[in-house]
Image (cartoon, rainbow, N blue to C red):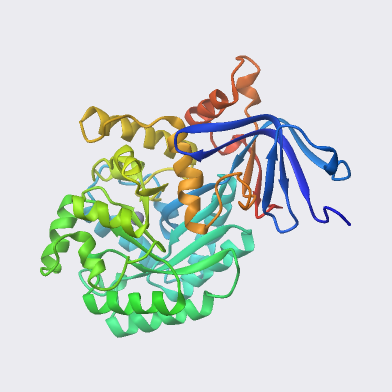
Length: 424
Ligand SMILES: [Zn+2]
């Protein structure tokens, strides 16, 4: 039979193939094949599809699903607590004790069940997540994301120095635990993949980072870590690794972050060498604007990075960031962009389409072709009801999405699809 398994979705389709502008199709069609892959987007439906039923979402918006490019699942319960504290204090008084509590399997089960529910409700179809140092409870996180049907990359966190006893472990045991986690989770699902996660170079020895690099290469999996978040942290990191020329070098000398298959969170305080190396390897930078201000870390110049060709996604950095609402995180990126521009760190502000791009195609590129509605992309999508605003104010489709970015939240998200499968 022709078109077996094909689905056609109708609605007001908006996406960003480039950071420059929204592409909008009013009452258009997205054609999705039996494998959940988009074959085309059309303004009108040609006769050849006359036998395929159309799933009509009416006047609602159909948008690519969001990718949260950096967040800590274990920190969900401490969201919104103790913001306005600098990173190292915040870690020692709040975040690390919270992470230690995830050693308890029953607690991990409860927290990670809620975490997967919250991702789905917020339309976060893709997530690049850190667990904790605990291999078993981080495997529970993998289970919950697989059960939810969400796309994700889950890193087991590694530390072997400069951290409280319950937040780090002996180097050899840590390397063995990472191997156990990877072998346990590697082939579980095509949607959820494991990663190595050196917490940050200050809390990892060279020996540990070399061990993680070796396993990332052996299993062909990503590395997810933090980079140049806070000035005091940058100084301590270089004291810890005195042979390194800068923060990025601490990873590079261990053989980490040498390929595009990597994500670094924050990347605020970089020198020109680091910026060029990030661009040249093609790794993803996770821009975390809420967290960067909450922990007084600094402002990442998104426009500068985009203009020099660095790949950028948008991260909530839960729970240094206070919101899983990706619309609010987009506003954070726009407002941080304004600060970069006003303080002379960037040559232009960040428009809403560019923030939307980061939250969709930018971060989605980590998983391959997700985050856009171009042919060949996975149909990871949101159906959004903004009728409470369109009733009173005629708007173009890009204006409707701009309004949604500034005023929207999970209550606007009616349906969520991953790989063409409706999850909600
Ligand atoms: Zn983080």
